[in-house]
Length: 158
Image (cartoon, rainbow, N blue to C red; front, side):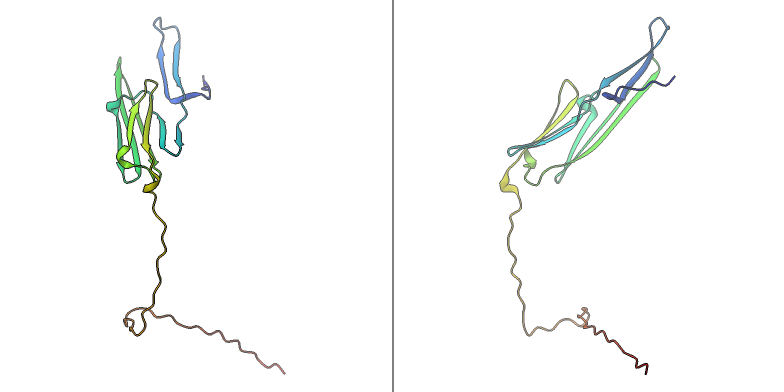
């Protein structure tokens, strides 16, 4: 028999087992938690659903402004093996203070990653002066601009 899961159930959490009296099959799943990214003037926050993972199963790496979150969980219960993998990449805003990045796992299984924001960290815009030095020769091996001329010939058909 095919059973359709309710839309709010996270399919990666669905498990099945036989009831204690062996009379029916039990399907269990956890409601889906929406992953969100929130940005305001003072703080950048991302919430990731890592329900079922323990802090020691989760690895958060920061490389430049890119966060990589991975999770790996394995267990065995009554001869049945269960494994779960998670991977996600998050790009921090340009004004994120990389030294302030923190993460914590809530009781509900949400990994909350926060970073303070500082507008002073945004790249400054500046004008770059364009100059031309006269009298210098260009190296011979550099390509020189070539002028192209289009010609149109007209035949006299008289």
